[in-house]
Image 1 (cartoon, rainbow, N blue to C red):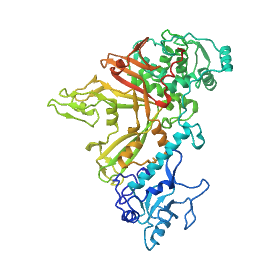
Image 2 (image 1 turned 60 degrees about the vertical axis):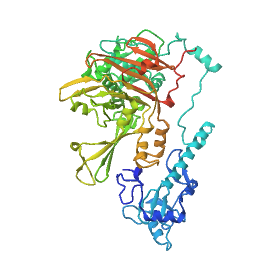
Image 3 (image 1 turned 120 degrees about the vertical axis):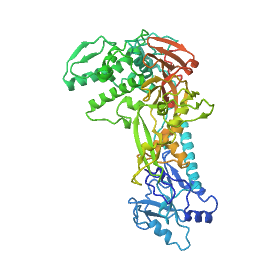
Image 4 (image 1 turned 90 degrees about the vertical axis):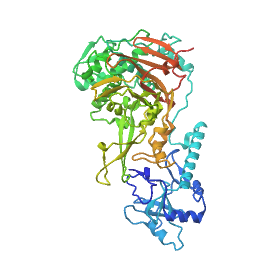
Length: 601
């Protein structure tokens, strides 16, 4: 693993192991006895954090390049500053030369064994040639980072961002046109009819034959703030896209296809672009027309991308959501001519909005070696698994996946209590002991060992979609069923406890870690944007094979029920009581509750 666990017990190697935070280094104990109870608090003034919230290092002038006092080198190896005399020496890992160790050994009276990494502000024992951990030093680093973060907030609020590398959030300011802008608007636009009691873009979608699964997801996506702003600002122009596809594919333009938008011609011989039909949908829905819209052309295009789902049978809303994002991503791959990885989050608008990264740690229970993998995701699927009350009245909390209920064949001797979204996320990120049939091959032990697995979120998306697993399948009874269990979900959600940085802090101590492939700026960006607001809930009612999907939208501080072509205003208590299947949360910095109201009051 990376330097995430660089301050482990000095008897262990740091190549991906997990061990206790306490250090038994005798040289550190000797240093503390020489310099008092809190010898590192004075180092706080010698540390600097740049950018705010990033990695800590030794403070120095911008033009100053630290070099080893013995050999004069600045880059071949790590550089450490002696805590006792502030001299800088190099150290090469893996048994290489170490001028830092030579410096410590050359001092007859001792006391020069402890040093600080110049770039990372981490403690190092020159005699043991390993990194060590001290709670007092850790507290000095955290205090320095807290002071830097407060300073950054003060600079941002004062309107002087010169000292910040980039501003993470632009404060919302209401806009009103001046005289010149008003003249341009009057000459270049026409006034749309506006209903005071309904926000712009709230339009029903006609059911085209068991298509409530599609309508429910489309309503959520049409009002996803980053996605809505992207298409309404003409970032994907369907006319330009069709001309480009025609030029590259050599196709001919057909006449308009009836569908839901007759202004769109199709290109013969060129595969339909799903993003173009989404763009046409946004134009139609936000045109001011209040009559229900028929997304027939989009349905036809989606069938071309998901031919296995091309029928008028009822489909799963979550499966449609995934296939729709894949269809938009596939079009980007075809346009650019090379595969684009969704893990980076910048390949297409679908993944720019919904793509996050999950981190999975699998730890060997014999030696502590840890294998870490990262996987991109566009949603998080959560098990409904609350505390269970058995027939004997005893309460037990299960920490295993819902496959336990499959093994029990849907046992009816347990009465479920209320489940919460917070509880589901806690279980999702809770360490789980893998069974004997899932032994992990340890690279250090070179045999298969029992292991612990823990999930966490390395990178948060702009919009988090949580999918609740309400459909269970029993292999023993060879049957499926729907779980009609109530789930409490908050309107405001803080994702900070489920971040990889938070999970590792709870495991190793209150230290800001740098992950493999990350810098401290990415960690700070995650933590500063961890607050989310609920804006859409997709619900399912009925049975497994005969149900109905409905979406609840939060617009202008008011909730609306979107039931295909019918739009009604509802109380928030109705939403809280709904049987949530998919919940959509947007980062709070991108969601302004009052800004959704376009019409003048």
